[in-house]
Image (cartoon, rainbow, N blue to C red; front, side, top):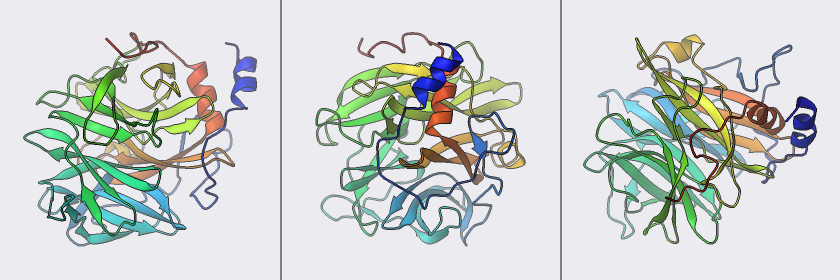
Length: 349
């Protein structure tokens, strides 16, 4: 597809959703050709943000009743991660609660995880769902629900260990919840591919499908990949930001990639950029508790303008924001598209 055809086709792509004019935004720097650009005042959350918490990163945000709510991965001063709630009027300055999120089971009994990290926050219909990595005799997915951010009901763990990077699609397909995840083994996730599962009730999961393979012509996603924020519904498909990992002689490097999944069958990849769209380059991404990490976990987006704000963890220490538009990112993913393994096919085997 030549550039003229790409531009003409992509200019008509729209985000499917509501208006969010109050979302944080910063125009692309003059002269920049990058599809994604960083907020100039990053990081928006630094070290020791509140008493008892050493670092916040890899966290999720959403609009709620005229404000913004966040579910944050908070590394406490004893090194164990828990989930903490936070609030913001502008999506930039955050008030983080000092007490961790209180979870109960469906009978109202305490149901606190031993640890919790890398949450995603997704609204499906009138309910908000938190999906995180939990301890279930190994790394597994935990899930909880709320409608008011005052009470939180933890559901049964959806899968056996080992699994990470769970994120729901923001609407049901054929009446079922759709959950992306990245199965692994008991090590640090060498399996490395993204899968899709569905459920009518968040209890029984099945119809598992393969979505995306690690690898490709480049090396930046050669070790593993994992889902990031909830995919954004567009008229062209599900726009998905994800992380890709490569190995170096100095350890792992996490970068941000982008793909578009089929609207009706999200196990099919329509487009997938051969390049990363953000990789560790700034001090807060290169230096920290775990250096060289860009880890996207959430987006805010405005259907009227096509603006997208991407929240990402930086070096397992900070929270950063990057920006793009649906037009910019769609042009880029189509222009740099590559087919990896059997990603174009439905993931049933």
